[in-house]
Length: 260
Ligand code: PGA
Image 1 (cartoon, protein in one colour):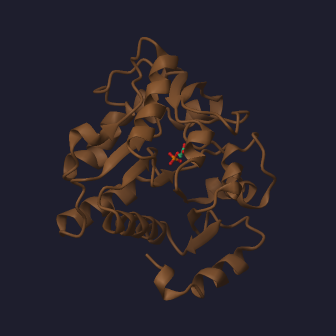
Image 2 (cartoon, helix red, strand yellow):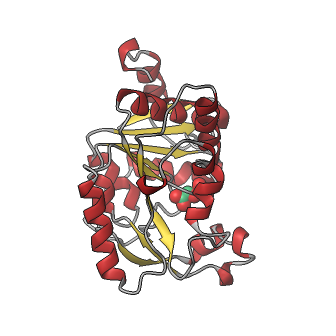
């Protein structure tokens, strides 16, 4: 895993946006796996700004979002489709038929989940998967105890996640308890992963993910087995890493041709 520690949240967001820009420039028909939550909002704003400056063309890009709430219509103000429309899709030249989400209203959820996996395969697989991390170590909505080989399926949120996602709904008791999420195995199939985490509230879980054991109790720890995974964090999220100095040294001495 490549661990990139940036001084501030803004620097970490810029680094993540630069990695995505390089991906899209290198492969204009990239298949991106996208994430929601508060962490990537700044990255999407930077991508929109790059697009407006003429630096990024989304016309051939396809996207698959990680997850969606069960029971919410796509135009619900708290749906993840609406989140992505607001922060990215309505501002760039992406084709609407290349945007994919799990359907929270699917009548047959297992069949829909199988179809989501099939659609990813038909698109050629995910080139780069953007990820956040939950306070308890989820990626997508793969909460602790998720099978590390899981595929897209329905999951039940933890009380911590209900609390963390309560704002839009007006309280944790109003957040849907169930979601459809790509599985840990689905995420691990992406050719590259890019996990962005910022702020001191993520310091413990980041340390566990990078330097702790691989365990379903902290699903993001499976990324230790991913061959091309970059973790971009600010100093606050890096505060509990034992080998932070080594990671900084590696990044400072990275060959120029490897930079985004
Ligand atoms: P956050 O969520 O960006 O709102 O902290 C991250 C996640 O749940 O993956």
